[in-house]
Length: 464
Ligand code: UDX
Ligand code: UDX
Ligand code: ADP
Image (cartoon, rainbow, N blue to C red; front, side):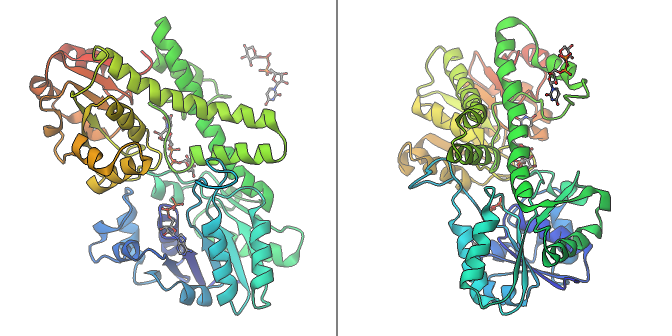
């Protein structure tokens, strides 16, 4: 079976880049990405390709090449579903904020809405691909909705979790470590559907890197991968605190353990804590699933990863207050970076939000500079926490577009995102314009401590 038309529901951080690359590598397939968010679709269609809604290195070039040829962005969800042989579901699955499982379980209402819409519209057989990260056994629920509300057509459900990391999305898509496809391996129709998706990826991914598994393994592999990655960050962050008390240096430790091939060098960078739309959400989800099977030790084991991460964010903020003579009330503190990591404009679960909120509770005056995050987004992140009124957030927080302006008359500078451009700033001139003593808190281990101390800064670095 050869796929001619693909539809992707959800034009976000996952759906957008993934479909752009699939379209670029499969010129014989028409790819339509749909979303109910009109503003987002308009941005994807903006004549100036630099205005697409997601910042990812290399993405605008891929979009430019395929858009209008075999890559389309639209708000007409029904039309795209109707035409497609294969439908990717790539909508958001946030943590539930209400009811049973509040604060833990994944909220599947957007997924279910998609399934019901597909069932209603579909007049011929379709392959449905779960792209969003979902709890294990979601395919079962999807199948039940589709089969019970549909028009008697056949649906094959596949799981094809996305492993791309933001900031390197295009690179990760073009050269993935592996592509994982889960499906019903016990039936001919299931195996055919899997092969159809294998063929899409085989256009550019070597066959031996395309793994096929049963659908539950695929769903659970995604949660497992993110839990393992997050656990490494929490493990190294736990050691960073011990380093600060013992004279050991976390960079030296990372290097020393990373050279053990059983451990490996990646994801051992101590930080103010992990953020992003996946790690916390997926681990909470894993904890919830484990508990729902009565596996309390499994749940407790993974919960420690979150507890450690919350502790790391909090202790960084506490360190700032303690160092500034136990009060930051009325003091100007310059925050460098708001995104959850460099090279993205995504701020979901960014540690910066929590550090800022803590400092605002201590009545600090915050000034933020981030090269890619909009002012509107920064206020919206703080307002979403609901700690104080929107007016107060506006009063206490200023967003600037000039990194030098951010530091004028500031008591302290804190680096919260590892943007490379921060390394190249003229820190001498920034030091000169700050109040003295000028405090510096490097939450990303970005700058050289000795050099910064030579400039006159009172310098704190995580893990030293
Ligand atoms: C360990 C360290 O590996 C070694 O570097 C250090 O110097 C001493 O401690 P050892 O305890 O001899 O070495 O063996 P190791 O291979 O690490 O196994 C430890 C235990 O973990 C064993 O019971 C092993 O069966 C178990 N294990 C190891 C697993 O269950 N799964 C694995 O994937 C690896
Ligand atoms: C992650 C997974 O890496 C990806 O495979 C999955 O598909 C989605 O979730 P992402 O959240 O985009 O990707 O970014 P990632 O690079 O994993 O970083 C997550 C967070 O961990 C960031 O806040 C980052 O700053 C932090 N981190 C990462 C560290 O603090 N130290 C590290 O060594 C690595
Ligand atoms: P991710 O990081 O998983 O891509 P995003 O929030 O960036 O998450 O993107 C998900 C997108 O899915 C959003 O743009 C949202 O508007 C869209 N979406 C959610 N539900 C539906 C739906 N029923 N139909 C179409 N689009 C939807």
